[in-house]
Image (cartoon, rainbow, N blue to C red; front, side, top):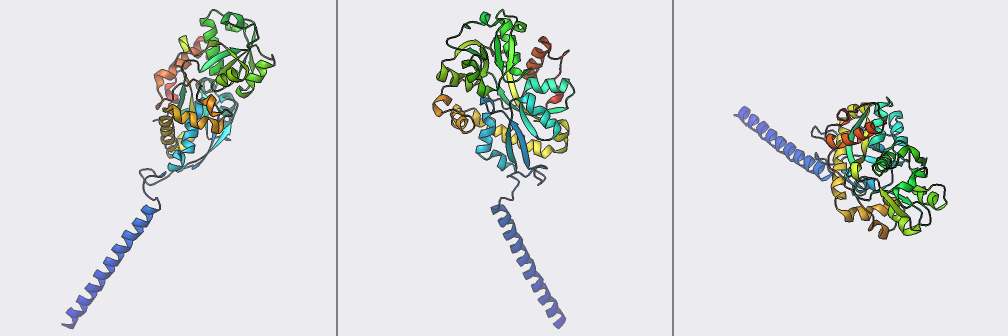
Length: 336
């Protein structure tokens, strides 16, 4: 009887212990949930976050990158467990080698620069997020109001500013000039950063400038710059302009990091579909006022990488002998 009574006492003790452990486990789980320990907030389905939570991202401070700054401002990267540090460059031609060298992890770049670097063996790349697509009057050749350039035919033999050589800006300009009966080889392209183009134009160092927004609208408002030719028209209408890429090695070694970046950028692209959001964020990273932001012409912020659209850029590069033959963009597209 005592033995039975003793076993019964042990059984009660075990029951109490089990209940206490159960209560403790519930409290611990509740505490983890309150602290954000769920699968959201940068944790993948397997409970693992990004392999590299801090990223240096090459950036060009133009309208094209508004979705990135929206994602940063609204905490979309933070939600994915990422800290991003934008590093401003003059263009993809400058930032893409930095990705290869490892001083940048990811970069925004125009697609011409990515495809050219891949075709020349500079590195092996993966495009991980689309960025921006041209719209009417988002790429424009502008001239001085008191100059002699008034029509495309006036550009033959003249100096035209581009932000970097052999990129989407120069390619669009060459295509538009040829479409309008001007041999692009008669034009002298001069390298000038976007923020300095208006001053170079006013000082007469160039006769025209291949500008993008918001610099087009700012130059028109500040110095009366005259639009001469929309270079994102005809064969280049709605052409994809730029996106975000990294090296093949980085993408393979950091798949969760890349996926987290893609999710954050998708939310940024979705936010940028609302023009009001773009107008709000532009003055935070570009030296323009809110009034100018409301006047600029906008393209679109695609929400997926489309190989068919991007192939247009590569085919145009082949047409203007930037690549020796057909360049297939499909192998560069990372899983979405």
